[in-house]
Image (cartoon, rainbow, N blue to C red; front, side):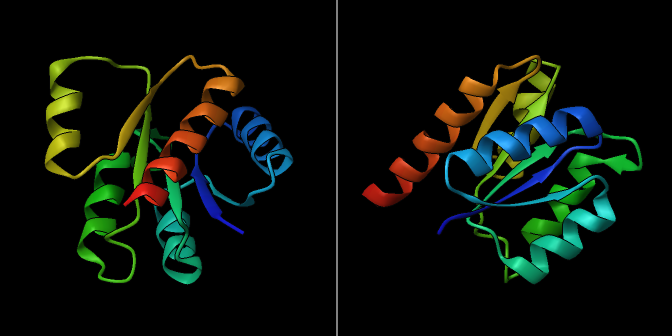
Length: 125
């Protein structure tokens, strides 16, 4: 079973995401901070991560940098969730190897579609 880590500090959004991802049959883990996100990612080695760029207790970019420096999880695709859609976000994400973007506000069906696309692309390679 594929394992997905959702790193989102908005409890209501996180709970909705967890519920829909689990209904789709994926093993789902969640975190609400940079520290918890890194700890869970290292311990669980997920197949895919969704990372909010504006966490209450830290910057999503700092977490992404830590993920990319860790040999155990550096290869894991990370989908950035952000309300900003500008050149700076896209440039910085590219530098850090972001797999894709999910721009807020998004629908839960677009979340499911993103997951299916990511795993479908991974299966082709």
